[in-house]
Image (cartoon, rainbow, N blue to C red; front, side, top):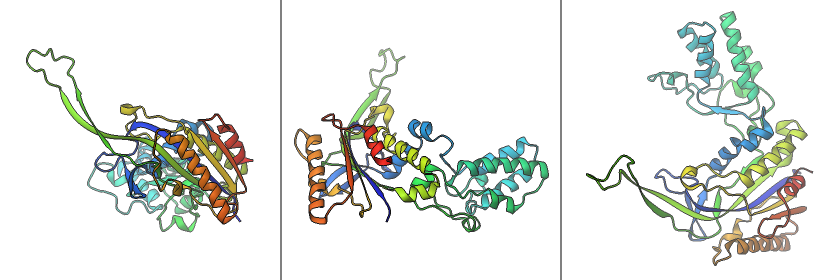
Length: 353
């Protein structure tokens, strides 16, 4: 049986637009028949894996996700004196191993060297590709066996946690694409919301007002505010298997918890400064089948003390689940910034011990 770590977080964001839809409005979802604000899991995972917390804790173990690896290789080959056409051919052949060049746009400068999909490279793969470009420049040839040798069997932390998608016909023969060890739900508000409009103007500093008293710019943006519930499920054994290193798995778990509790999605931060720490974290650990506690908020929380009521609802729901199903986890730890109970360090110790 696998050991599962489940995290339940409550985080309150002031007026903000953390994660926009195609019209620039905050993303929403209908739950319990009511409209809720929503932040996608993709948005949060991107913010976490590119955060200072992740970089400081896991330097050298974070992958690079890009469509521009072919451009990097091309520039590297040019620097080493390879002719332009040859450099392009070598770069495309190196990237075709990942099956990423099949639909490249050949009508735009450099576009033919950009992959048709984002490719998530391990740090070791990225460095090995650049080193291979040096060899190609000195030897004037590319051996496909060299490409097979550089594909790493080990996986970096973000790839081990969140997975990667490789569709190359060759590369899948020599590497095992890891199953994501971390599942992240979309965060939703525990209460219903109304997305509001902010009408704003900007003034021209050099406009004396003699000829034109109007604003230089008029705009409108949408925002919302709310207390979000976030659920994260971690397969501890799978994470350790993907990384092949227990100590690194523990560092990764600590970095993930730190980021989930402290790092806000980056949308419209300059406009709203909507940075927030989680007010409540419940961590569960055990071999039981995981389950979200989002059902605690199927009925929207209402009233003035939304945080206090949300905490009561989630703890009551956990107890009731235990009553009807039996223990849903072997152990539990709580951090409550409202009451000063517990600590983030205690949560990290609990998860990694």
